[in-house]
Length: 540
Image (cartoon, rainbow, N blue to C red; front, side, top):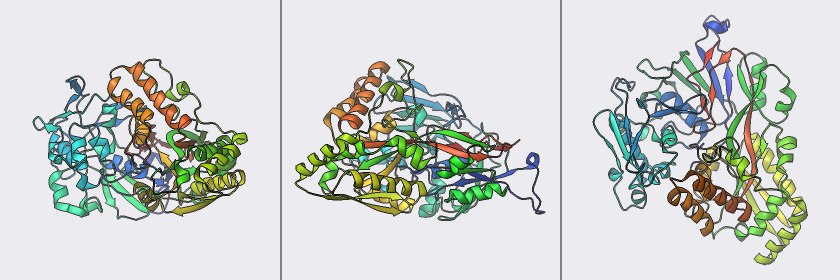
């Protein structure tokens, strides 16, 4: 999931397409399908996107070294096998398939990965995920600091079809990370030719995945893909055409589903409750978490840096009520930062969330006491805090609930809601131009670090805690080769962040609720990385 991410809620929708004669095909003859996205696709450049919708579309067009299968197991894609580790698990050597091709007929080579990773690490590229390369691959930290040229990133081609990368330190989740979009290959000659126009239209993009663009322009409400005839690989695409449609209004999606124009549509709020008994209704687990994020920058409102203020907010919010009575979308109350069913402790076999317990609880009897302490510490009698959200209905509903609860329980507090289109909201958060925001985060790889690393000192929230930093250093350096001690350190870090510092206020773990035609098969959902694989869809 996944900036990582800040990220956005993703939902799925699919439409039955009509035959050229105007009559509906039988499902057995269908070679086309349409999938809905709840927000616009920000970018098709694998180094520029930071939202799940973009990741999903990219995942249909581009193949990386590895790909998550339907069971969230890492499987070879362009790679011919799993990595060979050496040098104390810091050096990875990976052989590539010789038959992988770009859509212009040229071979996919180790140099394509070298170019992409160096481009991603280069600060001049302004990749939203630069850090995911800079903090892991050797020399990346010095490149990020401007002390070394990006060409010095420790990745190289050992021949046409052999790639070698050296990490700064052993990283247990690196193989999982290699299935994530920022580590996908890019064709140097093509990108240099396209320049700033790269990935903005079908003619300015090149593909090595199972599909390629047929119709696309930035800001469009529809994206059409056709099967890539040059593709050779593990994905056996059965569709000839895939269309992604932007369907922001869930009621519109439901109406189209009932009119048999959609085969799969997402539901939110009352639509979930009112349609949960229908044939085809199902819920799909997700690792996307929603939480209140604070800006700890000293130039912002001093209340944001006050622990008692944040504690009062946490105690005032009933996450069970938010999930079951307000959102009504089958989402789960979130009691920590790391969600359920993401990863198990390799030493105990226990789910990380279950093992860590509930770190965030509400206690309305403590709200006023915490609020009074915050007022006294700041020397104020009241406060006005802006809550930044995007323009999705569920975000605005959540914001209104929070506004009501907080203002009713914390006398003298005013919550101003600012709602913006998704990409504008993300941009402001990335720039640190917010006070409090309704944040989302999805995992990029199968490890608690994908969430917790967001709060290591130096991040965009300006949060800093030496105890938390030490726990994270212990997990990722001192105990990196000791699973039991490493996960103990990760648990300690999460407890410090959520329970002791109140640095975030966990709200809910997302669950997709959908209506789906029984004849539509093969759409795989994932708990990590790109949320869905559409390339494997087919009609029964």
